[in-house]
Image (cartoon, rainbow, N blue to C red; front, side, top):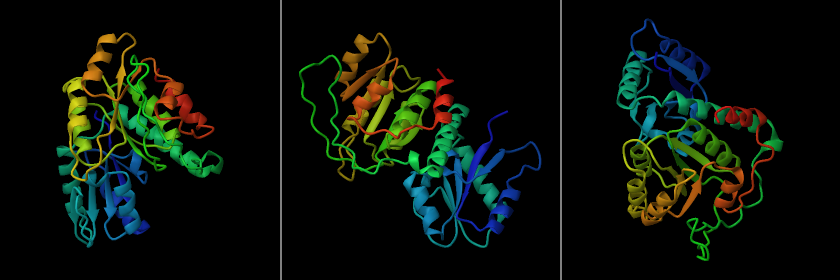
Length: 300
């Protein structure tokens, strides 16, 4: 049985939410199974009150317009669909089914990673001691490709507290490790499992870092790196810094990464110290949620 489609209901009254949630309960075994949540980060698709500015802002911050059904009178360009009021539940169900068919749900593995991150956010929000540090992040310096000592790396400008990072890997434990630690450093982390999906995401938003694994199925990782570094954004922003994730014995891949334009490489097994050095000594959240840390360790 395929995993349930996780649906976030955002910005509705308790009365509206109850009616929408009831409509999403399956009447038979046909069609997708839905699981309703208020946590946008852990969901595949979202139904959002288009007339609620705070709800729409949350969707935009997480770059989820393309997987959102807006319901209301205020036009929201970029959404997957927009439906009018009053709410027509049959039309909403039909629209959601179409969205699920054209954009299949994320894999169960990525769902597990997203759930862990959602738990960490919830725990940190309920415990002020775990909140992100308030002092400004230090100026970051992107190190050179490993194996090229003596080359000076250009200093990057001071970064905002929530820079966006894209992690591209098809291994559960790598996604979990990088997501947990990068979020702990104050980044907004996005996860995909193929080079093709990475390039699609890069057309929709700017990322400061892309952590890109070698050996992915489908589109070659080094070709993906070349495409990322050569792509010119319409808004004039520079290409993201690409960090290639190499195997334990990958001397040839290191050379190929350099030729493809990668800014840096990390070799497996990954470590928190490597990652901290890579992003310029960014301050971590202390302590990282113990429950999430334990969950991350079970994947190794």
